[in-house]
Length: 289
Ligand SMILES: NC(=O)c1ccc[n+]([C@@H]2O[C@H](COP(=O)([O-])OP(=O)(O)OC[C@H]3O[C@@H](n4cnc5c(N)ncnc54)[C@H](OP(=O)(O)O)[C@@H]3O)[C@@H](O)[C@H]2O)c1
Image 1 (cartoon, helix red, strand yellow):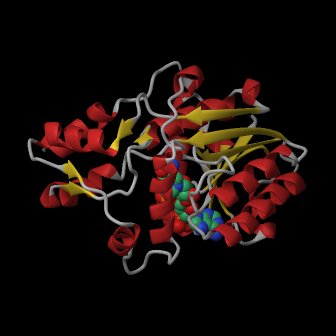
Image 2 (cartoon, protein in one colour):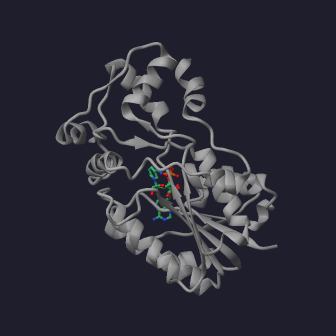
């Protein structure tokens, strides 16, 4: 059985990829779920996965964790750019040392060097590192998650305002479930080697269109009133969140304003045979209730 390792397996995307692999017929015992603290991964253990300890900050732990795996799925962390680059370099080296044949990387749609998104230098580095790794590679450029709109919505509705500084730019929001289904399909299909996919939602919406959609679903008026960069950064500052995050969020919307988040492709359907869920259908249940 060809084992597949997923690092970041306890996370919201990684755990869905593990489930996606099982749904596509991979035996749970042939999925190596790589986590920092196996004691906290009871759900993955209950699925029957081969649970192993591996830390992006510890080369040897990853080399041990990837042992016997043909393919390694790299779901990145939330670390700031420079340490995240080092984490990725270690993970690629660990895969090589462990004898893996193929790497699949969760990138982001705004990975082109011209994008103003603060994390883009990590993405351009990480994609290049895969291409020169000497291993087979597949790059999955994930669109902007739709999922966080659900917990943000009550505040947006209460204030009647969406403050994202995205100008007229459009965003092709996509759900983690769809990204995970597509990632699992790519992991299991050797024909994806040497290819990059842009995993986007079915349509791209401006923030004004998003406001209209939330108004339609909730029946409560919400308008697009962009904040200044300073005001928006202050809104994003919360205890416990990484220091770089407010500026990352400001620049992600600058990237949207400049057209880096609005691409719409059929790549999810190409990989899975099923189109991605539309934003209205995804938001309708949780926001209407
Ligand atoms: N496309 C988008 O819109 C978007 C938005 C935000 C972020 N992202 C990127 O996508 C990634 C996955 O998203 P997500 O929603 O799954 O995030 P998440 O739920 O926070 O999961 C991140 C995972 O990274 C693991 N991790 C953190 N530091 C690690 C380390 N040193 N070694 C090994 N694992 C480590 C965490 O492990 P523990 O369980 O041990 O804490 C966690 O399981 C994020 O980390 C970020 O890079 C994309």
